[in-house]
Image (cartoon, rainbow, N blue to C red; front, side, top):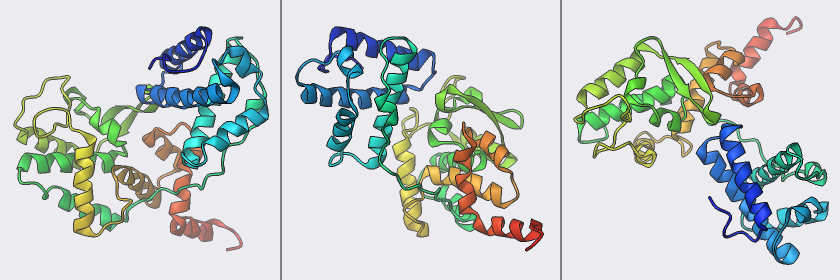
Amino acid sequence: MTCDHLPVSPEFAETITQWQEWLRHVRRSSQHTVVSYTTDLSQFCLFLGQHLGGQVTLKQIEALETRDIRAWLASRLREFKPSSTARALSTVKNFYRYLEKHGTISHSAIFHIRGPKLKKALPKALGVEQAQAALEVIGTQHDEDWINKRDLALLILIYGCGLRISEALSLCYKDIPSGDTLSIIGKGNKQRHVPVLRVVKSAIADYVSACPYPFSAKAPLFLGKRGMALDPGIFQLQLRKLRAALNLPESTTPHAFRHSFATHLLSAGGDLRSIQELLGHVSLSTTQRYTHVDKTRLMQAYKNAHPRA
C-alpha cells in the first residue's frame, strides 16, 4: 500500500514504507496485519493533514501534544467502534516505538494516552452436545457427496485441532499428516504442532478420496465447487444453514468451534499451558479467558482442593 494519497512529506512517506518492510521482515507480521496497520496509520495521517493544515512532516508528529492525540481519538467516535479505535491507537504507538528505536524521533506523550475502555468478550463456546450435533449434520446439507465430506472434514479439523479457519484453509495437500501431529503456521508466521485425532485424519482421507479434482503437493487441501481454493465465505454460509437447522446461537461461527475445542479440553481436565500451546496463543492471559467459561469445573476443583471448603 503506497502513501501517494496521504498528506505527508516525502521523508515521512519513505519512513512509512520502511516501517512496513520492518513489520514484514523483522516482526514477521502477516500481510493481513501489515494492511490493517497501514490503514490505521493512514487514517491518523489524514486526520493530521486536516488538523494541522497541510502536509505533515516527521517534525510535526514529534511535536504533537496530548490534546492533538485526544482530538484524533475523539474524531473517530462517530465512525468507528471502540475496539477499532483501540487497535488504531495501538498501531500508532507501534509506529512511534519504531521511530524511537531507529533514532528518527522521540515522543513520549503518545504512550500516556489510554484507549477507550472495552468490554472483555468471553469466548462463545458450544456445548458438547451442540458440537456433536453440528458434526453430524454438516455433512448432509449439500447435494454433492464430496462437498458434504469436505465440509465435515473442515469442521472436524477446526474443532478437533483448535485451528483458526484461516489456518485450516491455508493447508496444502502435502500438509496432510501421516503421523499423529499436524504442523500449523499461525499468526505472525509462528509454527506450532498440534495432535491429530484418528477421526480427523479419517474425515480428511474420506474427503480427499471423494474429491473429483486431482491434487498436487502444493494444491490447497480444501477446494471449492470449481476446484479452486475454498472461499471462507462459502463455508461460513454452510454454518449459517447449520445454525438454522439445529437452532444454534448466532455466535456459532468457525471460530466458535476453536473456542469449543479449548473449553471442552479444559472441562476434561486439560491444563492452561498445554491449551495455550495448542491454540498458538503468545500470552497465557489470552488463554485464561477460557477459565471464565468453565465455572462449573473451577468451582468443583476449588471444593475438592481448598482446605476450608
